[in-house]
Length: 208
Image (cartoon, rainbow, N blue to C red; front, side, top):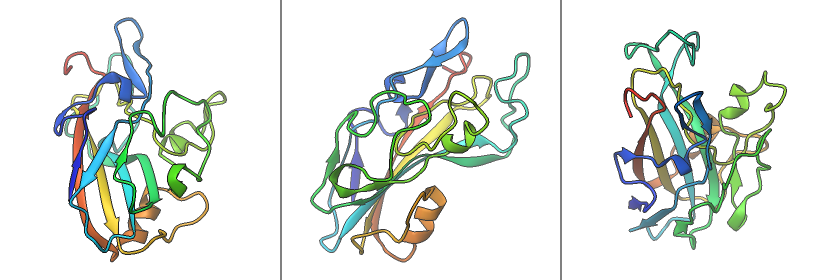
């Protein structure tokens, strides 16, 4: 199976329009267009009954102490954890592409609605749900795609991995407000094929 995009070249830089935040010379960051990139897939197994799409940042600092703190940096040696940006399940087998901006076109304070989505699919909560939990203006349930916003003082580039899974079941065994880890656990043993695409993003002007 192959996964491609005209928005993002594999192992290339993600354009700012597909990010939650863009660099700003005065304030470090500013809100961006937050559009989902286009994706297309081919060479799908004939037995596929649905698709799941998961996007995660594999380079998120394991400790938040130094995140976006003036006069401090996040060392490259710090342990890293996953941060889910998009969890989409139950895409029917007749769907072979997602258009740019089809699932996200702008930032919605307190999160976009869900889990119901286009094509009869469902979207899980992304990890901005937890990130904004203590913010009185932004807290809420963040369904669907919300793009990159890595710490502006991080010493490393962040890698955003889009992975498409072809599954042998029409409906993923998750319910309610599910998250990335829930979806990954549910598809274990049901993956017929998978394909990935990785984009790179930073808000650190020293790396950009």
